[in-house]
Image 1 (cartoon, protein in one colour):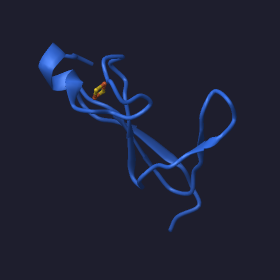
Image 2 (cartoon, rainbow, N blue to C red; image 1 turned 45 degrees about the vertical axis):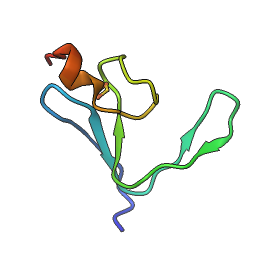
Image 3 (tube, rainbow, N blue to C red; image 1 turned 120 degrees about the vertical axis):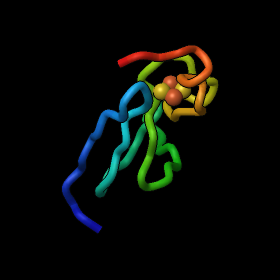
Image 4 (cartoon, rainbow, N blue to C red; image 1 turned 60 degrees about the horizontal axis):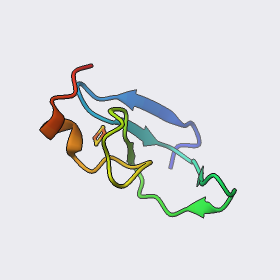
Length: 62
Ligand code: FES
């Protein structure tokens, strides 16, 4: 796996994160994440920080 972390904004959707990364919660605990991880950019996900597809339903445009 590449050690370089890459954030890629997907059209009208989440941020795709690949590489060697760790996601931590507000309490500092590590959040299990798939790789690649898809992070919500629209603010509508019920499973933050991850995308749950809500961006499609609310018509997120970016
Ligand atoms: S970007 Fe997909 S739910 Fe927010």
